[in-house]
Image 1 (spheres, one colour):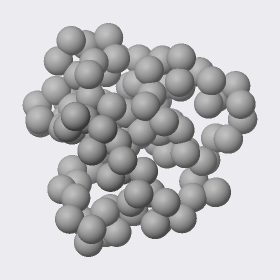
Image 2 (cartoon, rainbow, N blue to C red):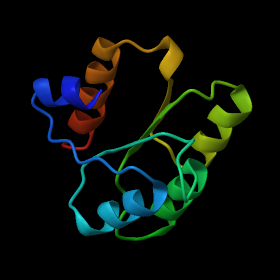
Image 3 (cartoon, helix red, strand yellow):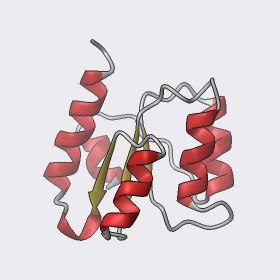
Image 4 (cartoon, helix red, strand yellow):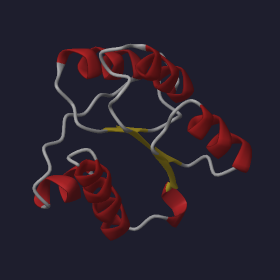
Amino acid sequence: MQTTLRRHGFNVVAAGDGEKALRLAKSESLRLVLLELIIPKVQGFEVLRRLKQDPKTASTPVLILSSLGQQSDIKRAMDLGAADYLVKANLSLDQLVKKVGELLKGGED
């Protein structure tokens, strides 16, 4: 996913766990966060909650990319403030690029 996004001109900063993701979100000027829910150290739902509660990151859109596809997980993420939720099993790389472009363009209006 990172390679494809970079190939389409997006700048990508990656974090291997929830703690690093939170640090990067606060230290970098991110326009969009792509978040997996099943990650080490601080799980994705908690990362999302903290991002949305912090005034510095609350307005940054968070796109959930997860293998969790149950309605309860989708609802929970959306209730916590996710901009959108994509299930990786049903997602092509072209769809990912399109969705990232849409979310970034929406932030420029």
